[in-house]
Length: 426
Image (tube, rainbow, N blue to C red; front, side, top):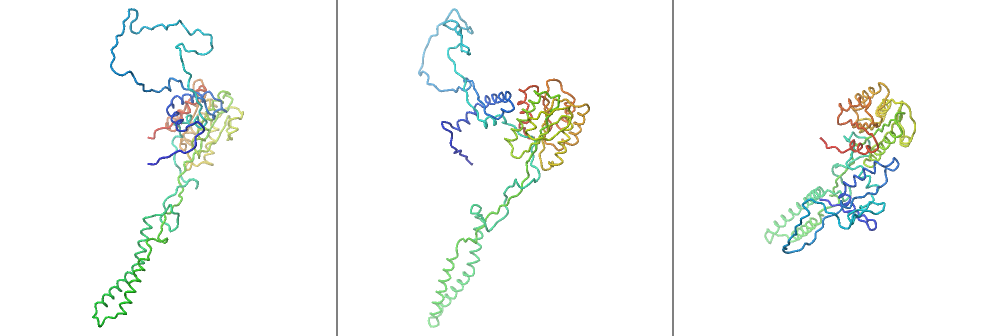
């Protein structure tokens, strides 16, 4: 089991651990306040923190108190005026007749709501909690940026942290056997010769030869002892090599309708939706590219600044945007190497007969290559022809094509969460 200990210094008079426990305990209240904050914020005010209030009754905790011990006998007096369920008047007059402007309590005492501030990071954590890009897959080798070290045999060179003890001891044992074998053989021959010489008759025994053999035996024994148990020559190291790994890179195409039928209120809703999507991808994924496409009668790939702030407008031909996305995929984003996503926002208004063209483009070209397509229709009235044609696509690709309607600004965040909620894998 591994334990991670956070030794970062806390700010003055603050405890990061206790704060995190508090956030976890009152997550439901905080998420509700965060959702309300997202709905009322403007486009340029989405990233800051938030002040959260929790009713005091919801943060009260049970406490243990010592009651009166022993046995008691009491007599409860009866009455002739009240029965069970009657409401008793509060003594001391009606009360609550003051001229103040606040919401005074008529029960004697009260307590203000508990208020605290969420940092930007904590606020965005709650905003995007439980969200993910659906069907994200690991694709073929893209480049050498994403690699993983793997075992690649044994090496004679390396750092101490990678030493292979078993292999090193095996090499040392083999070296000792190889180095000591001839010495042992010579020692055995010398011992046999000494024993044969000492068994001879005293007249035939050669003292000089015996002394020489004893000296040789002593020399050989010292040589055996001098063979080291382990040597730097024996050390072996685990060799690691960097192997390219399949990449989970993704690209998100953001398609926004800026035609004349999109009122300024509709465009603001679309921008807020795409800003949420932009913050979500930027915060949760390191290798996701964004491609911004604006369209009226013609579609154009633009940068982030122009996408959110340009005032260009015109008629409506939705297929121009889908055709441009198809061309960009063919030129820059091979489906075998990229996860492809599209998010489209429109009021559903489209040129005559162009909606069928959009349907055919999706069915025949785009959807077979996309991981996920989301369509958000910003309109308070009944759906138009584009929605009806898209329903055909949704029926063919139920898990990879999602459609939702946004009527007013308060619908943005719930719709966003529904489109990108974390789904259980089948």
